[in-house]
Length: 349
Image (cartoon, rainbow, N blue to C red; front, side, top):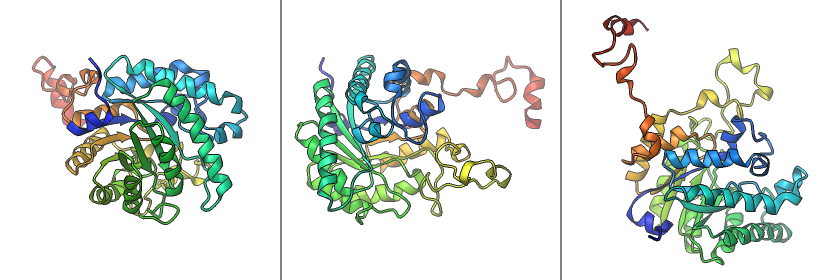
């Protein structure tokens, strides 16, 4: 039986897309924070495969090829430009392999280049060339759709969308809002989303940079502004009005703050700000009730977050076999076979 595509699935219910490979593989010791180039795809491919599989078991409907920052500009910075094509092709092959183990869609990926400048034709040509070579490998791999993500410049997102549209594949375009809450070229998120809709995107929304609390007001505005499907993929950190992005979060415990290099919690001292799986579940329910049906979690996400998101939408993925069940905990459980003395002692724990 032919598997249904992205737009067919979105027409009948939510689609979950697990992201956050950069942070999770850095935590596991296979990727360097800072440059964040996915060298792991070539150096430790089994780790990428295993993480894809973890997310699939947790309930992701999409296996996204790990080509975020696998573009020419980033590889040039670390002296691995010669690995550009092998890295992209390997990432796509790994994603296809794992997706075939379930009923998952395979997504190609292009992202912010950090080269864009308004009204700079040379930069635009450079960016377009980078996107075109990555997208050519994506098309050859036979993916189901293409994600263009983490764009802070509307102008750069428009270039990405134009390249994707030429493939005739479905497109997902997501913006990343920094501290001021607007695109870097001055557009409000809803305005930018409307422009992307008019230019032919199939899904538009936000990913990364902002946590649930500071992303959802803009998601609500986007939902009201467009008629196409909307995406929301926050980072799993407790951002606030005062510190609306995970880049702006600062350690509040002064007994700990002194040991953080430069006093900057981002990117590897964000542990105290981590949301719980219950907050992710609440996000899933609220976003879907709002009419947002392309859902995920970005940098910082672990499989437990994706499982919580899937369960909040009424699903029971394979990993739900091991969802928490405290009934047999030695002190907090209620199973009658537990020792009464330990259950009585629970109030003193």
